[in-house]
Length: 622
Image 1 (cartoon, rainbow, N blue to C red):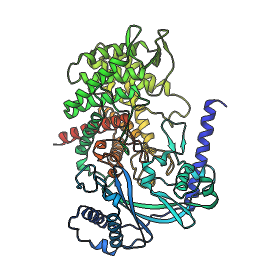
Image 2: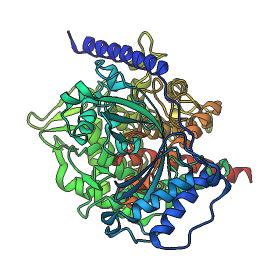
Image 3: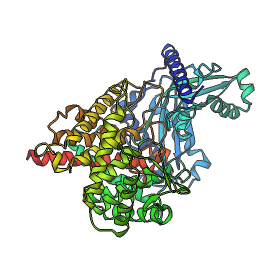
Image 4: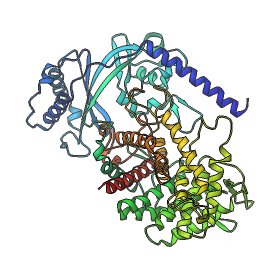
């Protein structure tokens, strides 16, 4: 079986398995248990904190006095991102639940001896509480291969293990913290997982019950339970009012830049991945194109937000790259981590350098932009496409193509033209754009399927800002070769609208995200950021060409709303070792809260650029 056939076989297998899991889940669907209203839940937390700090306790509102849990309730104490104590009650009123929790925690000597037990509520490392209502158990299909791994509803369902008279409950918050919701299968698509490793999870519960997994399989029972958890800090956040969108986008972009700067070391290198639960900084798998793209966003943040510290961080990052990875590929500069240079790293480094030069001269940036732009042009084939690799051993280009690289190179060449202005970079960019949006995307079904084209459409808009005079149509219109690019990007945007989640299409609050299928694969928040960048570019290009932008506005504003809801502001603070350090971060998915530097880059750039559009529209309307 060749690779393509294998990918198709695996895809069909996962679709069938996923469909089966969804069908079974619908038969044994769980329903959320009743929970106190927001005012009553807030009173619960206020009272527990007052008792902890020996302060006067607030008066219970009517909703707290009247509410009774239908079944089990659990109050959890969180410290440093970990659950450290719980108080469980059965079918009691909220007043009784809170009274029992106060007594349980007051008598817990280990809990009261913790250094954060007496810290005030405004301390970033204070104690946090959650209140969980537990629903009725439902079958897990344990023992049914594949289906068992897909039958747990992420963020809404936990696990209940029973052995005789003993029980162990695992809350969704705990499963999220241990990254269990994305630990089942790794799909052929990049960075895509789904399901849970049910054997691992049940094995953990079995050990807590004092038996092996094999013994638990023989004598125990495992069920999934629907759980509603209320937190002190709401996450995801409430939607932003339309009139506040511009300001909120700018604040979010600023906090994203500050997040990156907090996680940049003195050498100029960024933390590649931040794991928020334990506060780990991960550098393994460090990616040079993503380093350069992150540097581009910091330079952009300086230009649009007037952040001098962002420019300093971008310069430091560019010099780090220059010291360690800039090489010579023939007559030009290139970027290589080993004996092979690639177009992607060179293009994004050139983009970062050009953005830095837009706000002032910087010698390293200019030298890199000139040298790397020459390298990109030297890699171009007669048909406009680029050869994406260069072998430093043989001194020859390698004619293979990688995802994203050509679009990144087109943007780099278009931006280089603004600084160098010799016409050659513009011409090379337009030949490449014609290849990307014309003949290279012409096959049966090409109007109904698209790849990840965000860099392509960002590049098209950049190139449209300075078309050659000989090819300009009318004043303010696009250059003729870019009319085709606009058509391509509009078709791509319309295609994405079809896979953009509407309200209620998934069990999670992800309206505005992009994905395929409800309840199986988590929407990628990072993918939303990169696509929205491109849609803002397409919007700008369409507006200049007097093309209707209504569909683009809908896509962008729903997507921006989703990013603002799920970004860390500061996020689920009770799960984080240091919530303030995570402010401004953008997680991978609702199920995977790790933050990679490029997640913040793409979302931050999209937010900045759309805030600029809104600001321009507001000024025009005055």
